[in-house]
Amino acid sequence: MEDPDVPRGTIVKVRNCIGFVLLCSKFGFRESWPFMGKIISVANQKGGVGKTTTAVNLAACLALSGRKVLVVDMDPQGNASSGLGVNLKENQRGVYELLADDLSLELVVYPTEIDTLKIIPSNVELAGAEIELVERAHREKILSTALNGVTEEYEYVVIDCPPSLGLLTLNALTASNSVLIPMQCEYYALQGLSHLLKTLQLIKKSLNPTLTVEGIVLTMFDNRTLLTGQVESQVRNYFSEYLMETIIPRNIRLSEAPSHGKPIVLYANRSKGSDSYVELAKEVIKRTKGEMVFPKVEPQEIAYEEWIKENKLRDFSKK
Ligand SMILES: Nc1ncnc2c1ncn2[C@@H]1O[C@H](COP(=O)(O)OP(=O)(O)O)[C@@H](O)[C@H]1O
Ligand SMILES: [Mg+2]
Image (cartoon, rainbow, N blue to C red; front, side, top):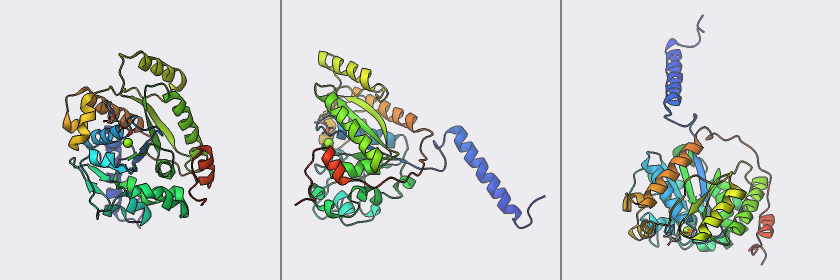
């Protein structure tokens, strides 16, 4: 017996809708349903390890696979912005205004050469944010609040972090579902890595309980040097569970691309560097399958002070 209160047309519509969802899941049209994107921070407190190169090129490869992607440039140096050909003029608004003036997202999102890739660029004002934002309530969650709802529109949001563990990085990690850690195979890298993983534990405990490590990706890999091999095998020994399969080789094309304002896939599509970032994007997509809907866990309150102490940073709230 059909329920007389429900018109027949409605039942047919609901049935069609369920059929469509089943079809999508079968053919992998969407990784999961209901759709919810993923926010990935690219972070490492060390400078020059390939964070920006990874953020820009991973985002570009994800976007060229037809997914809607947003890059958030959290580094006041603005390298991700210029690397994607976006250079803010003095009167244009970017990440700083999003954070400091609570601007809405659409006012700070800019297009790039790739249709499905957008960016919230940074400008030099962002350098002052570390000090200014300290006075704000819930200072660790300003970015997270500003990005509210962004994963309903974008399948991947890639945040390029500055080379420090200050308030900007703390905001990025609090807003993220996972962290991708680029690592250069050099002598001090392992030390820095242990510290970073410990720091991530602190955020998980306090601000963002669902934060995961997306993986460690070895960058600027040059297997002709002995040290590279030694560091690689150390990482394999101690952090094998986190290590991404894809390794990014040292490739001159990757270092040339930013000066042309292009990601490697548009600048030198046939290079080893380009191939490696395509592989990395595939790996990230594969890892994301089936884990896009996150359980809602209420975090406990932190702890900016705890963070400052743990990372031996200067506390800007104490004048
Ligand atoms: N795989 C690579 N091969 C060659 N040069 C690279 C590679 N990755 C990054 N670079 C270059 O190394 C420098 C530092 O990289 P960058 O991504 O800016 O690091 P970070 O953002 O961690 O400071 C840049 O000049 C960049 O062009
Ligand atoms: Mg950088």
